[in-house]
Amino acid sequence: MNETGAPARRIRLALITGLSGSGRSSVAKCLEDLRYYCVDNLPLPLLRELLARPGELIEGRDRIAVVADVRTPGFEREFPAVLAEIDAERFDATLVFLEASDEVLIRRFSETRRPHPLAPDAPPSEGIRRERLLLGELRERADLVLDTSEWSIHEVRSVIHREFSELGGNGHQMLVSLISFGFKFGIPYGSDLLFDVRFLPNPYFVAGLRERTGREPPVQAYLDAQADFPDLLARLRDLLVYLLPRYQRENRSYLSIAIGCTGGRHRSVAVAERLAAALGDAGWSVQLLHRDVER
Image 1 (cartoon, one colour):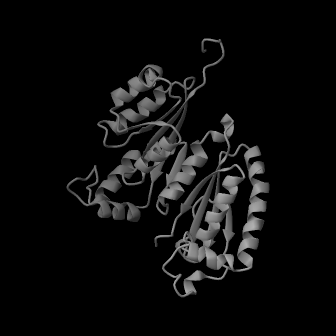
Image 2 (tube, rainbow, N blue to C red):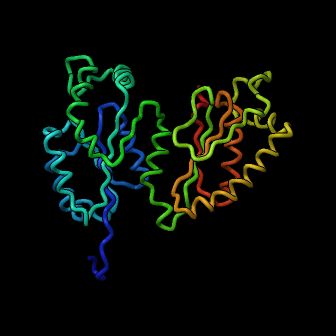
Image 3 (tube, helix red, strand yellow):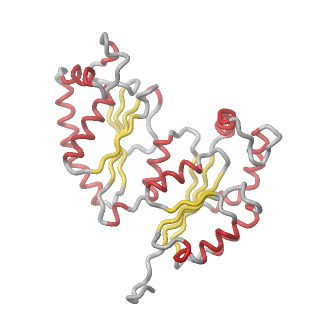
């Protein structure tokens, strides 16, 4: 109970664990963007103290994210015990387990040239094998298991916003994410709405425009001169202005809209730029990402 006698609001607690190299730090950064107080690799005795006295140690914070993994001494033995001790009346806890395929994890360790924490003097594959065995039971207990094998950082951000953002329930407006992409590199994971704009004339085949992008005035001027481009923008704007309030009415806090062309450098970028401006003018909070513009 708080001072007024009403039940105290529970603290939102995200516990992030999983395989080394699977993206735990990236998830923590996304949660920081959602105003979580993030702690990485806290020794388990200190984690217990934090969970016992959150109001004293982190005053005024109602969102906490903790990254815990095999780097912590005694993790595989003690961390499950810490989970069992969490006070459900005080915390709304979610255990997130991150993983990826062996091939992807080996490639990530090779790219960073860092040893696996469980195999400092052996190939990463041996550390990955040991870690999967150690964390098997913990994975089964997770509330949310995320395989990041094929994800970009933008796709990680999309999923974390979808699962943890509370904007829609707190009187704030739904966040709209506009992502331009190239179909030849795959469709963005977790897209709620997807529009294919490959029917537009392609600036890639126009002299002087191939090396430019849809953010640049010459490319946009070329597209503006095509009859379908302004017509498409007007129709998409009207459709989204109609749809977005209805998604928000369903307590959505985050909506991902993907705009795709062949390579993700010209047409989809220009359309996303114009739509972001139009939706911003209509009062929506818009996050704009161009996934493949630099490829």
